[in-house]
Length: 260
Image 1 (cartoon, helix red, strand yellow):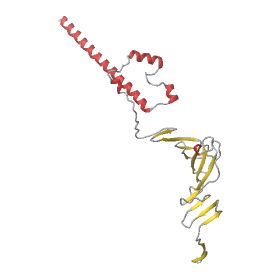
Image 2 (spheres, helix red, strand yellow; image 1 turned 30 degrees about the horizontal axis):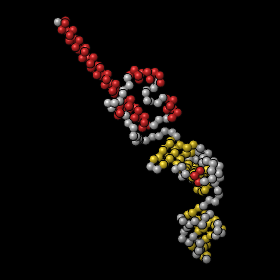
Image 3 (cartoon, helix red, strand yellow; image 1 turned 45 degrees about the horizontal axis):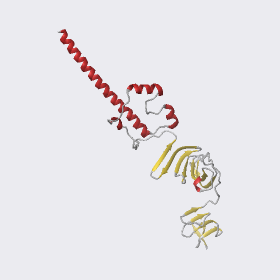
Image 4 (cartoon, one colour; image 1 turned 180 degrees about the horizontal axis):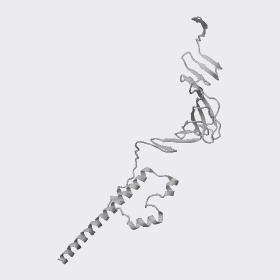
């Protein structure tokens, strides 16, 4: 049923639909709009207010992708910048199952609206449900990755990490140095190790750190071990100095008596 409404000399044609609108066929509709305000594109599924299904299948080769949705518009009044948000499915490795697919969400605010996730899309967020990984990057460069596994997670940052405070939990600490059973290396042993390896005992070399990095918690424990050992050396040296001072003072008194 259609009606014509006239307002201040302007005629508006309106259409009132008393049933669901379907474009396509009942088996494979392209568009559905229901009377209760739901919309579906490419699917009969009406579980949400807005439902979209992309029927194009994702390729089986690494970096194959399928564009799911695009949202775009002008970023400023003079049209020199255009923003675009694109959602992709991308194949992270060769395969045909969902475990090798990731969801790639890219956004740009200029006219270089590249269209190849993993290679040249602008600032992006990627979710990998099969491996429980979330990644952030720009074009082909990943700059942060968060990997979860149960209650633990691993954060990887390609660049400088800045924080006001960092708490590192570790089950290893170095107070064993003060145990009665701890064998404190002699300074001659430490000297020999330094001359041979060019590093302190139990401390990784420069080459090892460059290749493998360091575990911050473990390294803090190792550095504390060296500080505690150094403290013991200092205590030993202080005791030796005090003994020498006492002997010197005793000799000086004896010498004074002999001179008198």
